[in-house]
Image (cartoon, rainbow, N blue to C red; front, top):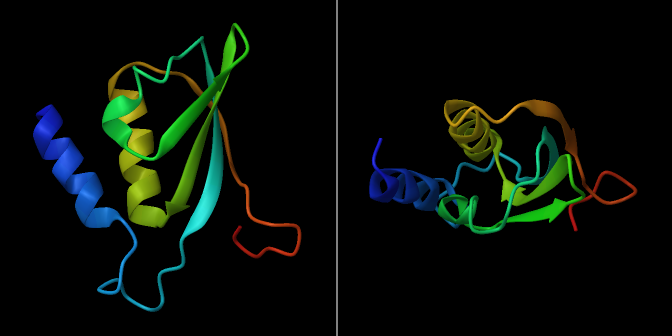
Length: 96
C-alpha cells in the first residue's frame, strides 16, 4: 500500500458524523520495542510518540476498531515489535 493510499484509508476511518452509532472511539496506548520518533509515525496521523530509549509508547486518540487495526497492521508491516495495547480512556471508562 502506498503512503498516500494508507493516509487516505486512515482519513476515511476518522470519527465523524457519518460513522455508525454503534462504533465507539477510544484512546489507546500502544507500547512497542525500540526508540521510535514522531517522524517515523507521521503517516499515521493523530498518533503521538513518547520514547524512553528501548521502549516507545504511541498514543492513538479517537480510534475505533478499524483505525486501531490499521495502525497495528502498519507497525507490524514495518517490523515493529508490539509489546502491549491498552485502552487509555478516562477513569470511569469515559473517553477524554
